[in-house]
Image (cartoon, rainbow, N blue to C red):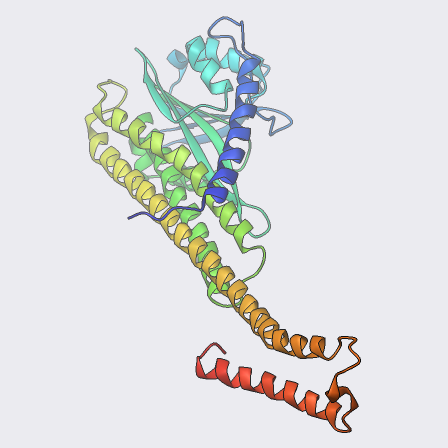
Amino acid sequence: MRQHFPRSFDLHILREAETLEIMRHRNRARKSGLPPGTLLHIGDRKVDHAKITRTDYDPEVHECRELDGNKPLIAPAHLEKLSWIEVTGLHDVQLLQGIGDAFGIHSLMLEDIANTDQRPKIDVGDSQVFIVVKMLQLRGDIRTELDIEQVSFILGRGYLLTFQEKDGDVFDSVRQRLRQKGSRLRKHGADYLAYALLDLVVDHYFVVLEGIADQMDDLEASILGEPKPDLTTRIHHLKRTLLQMRKATWPMRDMISSLLRMESPLVSGEMTPFLHDLHDHTLQVVDAIETHRDMLSGLLEVHLSNINNQLGAVMKVLTIIATIFIPLTFVAGVYGMNFDVMPELHWKWGYPIVLLFMFGIAAGLLVYFRIKKWL
């Protein structure tokens, strides 16, 4: 049976999720009343200037250069080699429109590219395949912040367009393999390049999960060792990170399933085994996320149990102290009454006898608590 978070903790997660949803709805509200296909950037501007990088390759030649975004792009019909065109920066809608005009990209596809709040999905057209995925990386000084970036692919005959929000991705190994003469990437078509990039995106999910697992190990050591006040906040942070990962990976599983089932001349039959492998990796990621969530639930319950045990120990000590002082207070209260006729008030040894009696009561209670194993 799956363990659950306390209701107050779930409500805290829910409030944050609702806040994010409100922000997304406000972004979408900017398009209210505009006709479908209107090109409008929705999201944060993450680079100062958009840029285009074009890599042409075949088994013998590899050329990579940065293009001038102010000049018209070469239409796909005039591409002599396989081309990978990388567009970094989605805020420049004029640049996106120019690329769309050059490559015949449907206006609805361009609209989805500029909207960075898309779910992973796939759309198959007559001459192009449009894919949206979420690329995940851990950033920050101690690599605890999850960075989510939308990457869009447009696969055409002899070319692949990729659209990213900013510099810094997980595709460096593909770029390195393209520079190596005789590599498999240079012998296959643009569909294999698209697969290689998608495979890197999915493989990096495992890197993120490994980083989260390391954080969970540190949390477990802290919980079982000396619990700290910030542990609940750290558990909440990891819980939110896994929720974001789940939102990015679950639709991708369905997207790759659709990619396997689709019939398109742009994806050769040779890609089927590779896509099956990619689908299996995505399922492993989804399962690992669910496992991590269950483990976090267990860690939270252990942490809350430790807090309750510590509170119980403190309350036990305070209760024992109060129990000891109740009869002592009673004795002191009796002899603090202002009656004239109290024989003990005039005894020579009355004061030390009463103190000794009170000490005996306290010692007797301590012995009794020890016998009962309450101490």
